[in-house]
Length: 231
Image 1 (tube, rainbow, N blue to C red):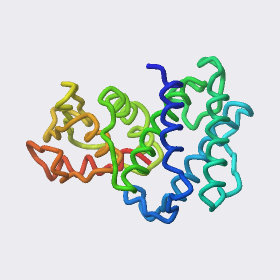
Image 2 (cartoon, rainbow, N blue to C red):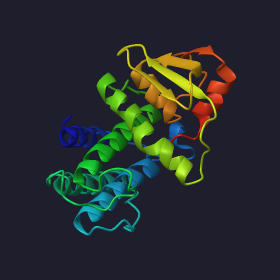
Image 3 (cartoon, rainbow, N blue to C red):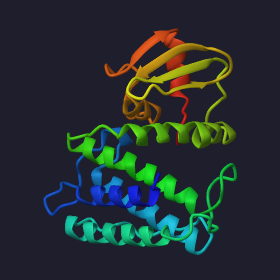
């Protein structure tokens, strides 16, 4: 997968949500009490955090808050997006600071991570304005894989979640892919499109969303899904 191309496309897609008419105070229901301004600030600050991680091999970047005027915010955001795209145009094998030692500490890690991060925040922004679009199935599958490879183990390691004592199964109805999280055979299974499953793992869709179908011990399955599996 060409993560750099995907990242650039999604950065542009998010930027298109910031227009002179954008109401920056619009709530973002999928991100707690954030407004759209908070979401844009978060994404732009994260862009520069990764630029620093690549250029200076450190993870302590802290920038000034983004402008609160929509026109100035768009200009600021575009600058951070351009800087990130330039930084991640390097050889994927080039060394970079990352927040985990369980995966390669290089530019390639950030190409994937920021592509999937921006993908999710594009959905958050679209959802805030009432126009969410399903996530491409192949990208959603990769996002699900990232949860199992990176975030679920990291949440346990950080003491923010406990390892499940039973297993939850997931089935993507549009791709046929299946996953099992936890030990032994799954006591419950949740099924839906890959997009809906990814959104459920990231707590963008509730466990009882009509787009999701449960079989087996739903109560136990819902507790495993609640994790939290991601930050």
